[in-house]
Length: 208
Length: 208
DNA sequence: TAGTTTACATACATTCATGGATGTATAGTG
DNA sequence: CACTATACATCCATGAATGTATGTAAACTA
Image (tube, rainbow over all chains, first blue to last red; front, side, top):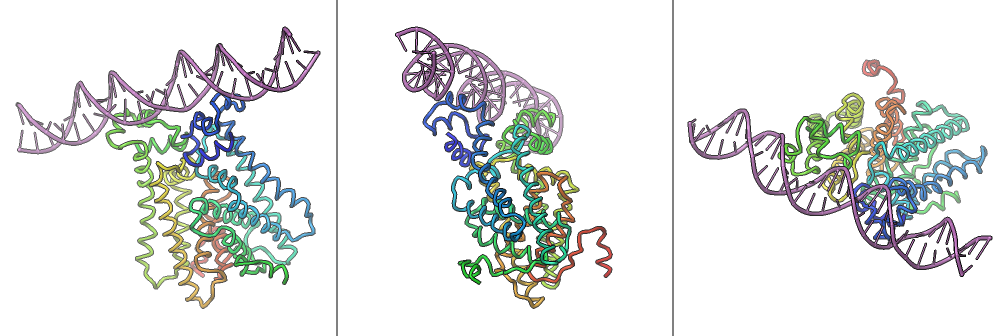
């Protein structure tokens, strides 16, 4: 059912997809949908949460598990690469994000979705800021711009890459471009970075 | 008419706004709309082009007028600041971009709009790449990442900032944040940059 | 001034999505 | 075995948006 909705939402947009079509695609009738979900908005939310809840839980748990001993920038980079990789390899994640970014209208009735989006973003920016400050202190450097500005820029860079890539996945390779531009940005903040990263196999870096 | 559509599209989303509502808001009837536009999609396109055509023409003309003598990075920065400033000061520009990014579903019937968006983006990325290469040669530095990657990242940064700001204009100040993160990114590419830019009045920089 | 085009308004027919009401088969429970 | 809740399917009434066809006042033109 949710799979059918995903496919149709991506192909036709949310508002132009009827519950009838979803039911038909799922091999059922509208009655079944109305049994499981209050209305279309509830179905949409369920579809989103099915993908986003586990995706949000991942990095958060990792961050907590790692504790304050690890390298905060490496954690962020790892989380980003994980997200970008998922975006390119997991069709479901890609579909849902495509729907969320280009196939739905964020109006008052979708207010709950937009609110979730906003709080998730703020949490992400907050994590970035904390990590950047921590890393700056550790590396004995002073951030050339305020921490919140630096974090906001980093988030804009990553989310901008994702959105642009979804608009045309053939325009560039998401993961390597993400790696490299991420490192460019961090280098601009004053962190010593390996700007060759993102090209080919990374095993040598780990070995080195 | 187009003003009415702008307001309603932003408030309710494109698909949930009826031609009846637009007509009523404009103090007319649906007949008038069907006289001027083939259908809702045509009206939407007209609304977009009214804002985007002059906005695209600006930087292009400036770039051509400036010629190869000027500082290419300064041109890009100027164009960016101009766009960001317009976004925060011109309510119409802000509305239309809000609609285009969060209040419309990019499906097959909006294919022409998406195509325009894509070609505009590619042109922008192309300009960025050319400017970065030119500036790198002039400053006798070697870009630490391929030119197209650097350009793609720069574009993702700017467009990401705009999209995130539209999602919540109170989250951060668009223009100063844009300035500073822009310079952070360029510094990461190896260009010598004044990372204090974006805070308060810029007159002193010009004077210095 | 008669004719024609413009710029709408009005009226109508069609299509269609929604929500709710009702029917029904299946599985579980005492 | 009777009863009940689940998990649907089917049917219907309603409202609403669209597109088109037709009416019409004003302006322009010959």
